[in-house]
Image 1 (tube, helix red, strand yellow):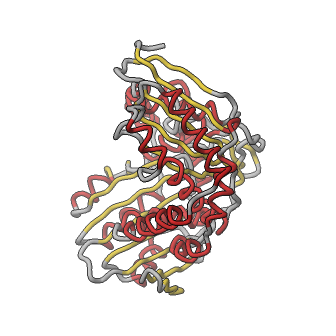
Image 2: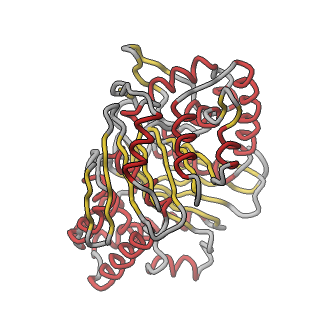
Length: 425
């Protein structure tokens, strides 16, 4: 076990790699009562095509999400109920690139950790239970299909990307999940739920040595091989389409405006790109930006307006959206401001305010055990140290953000998706 200190933020992270390839990160905080454990697989909705035992597998959309639902079933009952009976608050989620299982508790932490590690690493599926789950998830998908926020997001993904699987809904479709069988789930569990493709992160009032001993006791000794994935050929630099319109039962148009960004390689450069791009987003769209004030004053956006920058293997994007009576006017204003900032640059005082605000938000996020554990897991899969953000922030200059803004100013990178009133299209 290796202990690494991050003096700028007063954090210490303990790290161990087991013989089976599992990486464990522990942030010991003995002054707190509660503890949080997060056990994640480097496997998400976009991982539909991969090589297993030398053979390429092309699985239906929605398997990662379906598998997450089914992992709580055990031969003896249900792990959610077992954890809740021990006073824990458990749950799980599937994103485009990761599946995570977690719990928070103030007592019986190591008993709960054993349950978590056991049910995630030991699959148990039957044909009957899979058939039943298809109906449950099918209902969930039907609800999502009626959600305009979800529909406009995936409409934007289709506009931005030519073929990358980020375009595909994480839960899949009712058609795609109808092809999922118990054999499909066992094959995907075998491929991705191996210790070398997973990470365990823990924060709170825990003993790191005991966490490691528990993982060594419960988990399989075999490491599993490297998982080769296929996301298609490299995406071109411009958006696949300029826009898309949908009609649904909404009272005000809902929009998502996006910019296709350059992808960063795994490693610390990905964290640096994230930090720089977040600052560029704030300069362009943030609540303290001139553009935000102008759009709000004109009634083109409201308090539901949100924005962010996201990176995944093989793709990256800036997205902003909300409600607007004139989405095209918002698009025009955003592109005009991006081009103005690209030409004139940022005022130094404004840049420094953005930088202090962004850094402060990341430091405040360290008060959340959930944030620490999830961010650490994502960083591990992306090949960088999550808690090194202070050093990278210190090296970010105004010129780095301005260069990012110049890339964002290219109108061919942008797309607009809108859901307008009028019932289903």
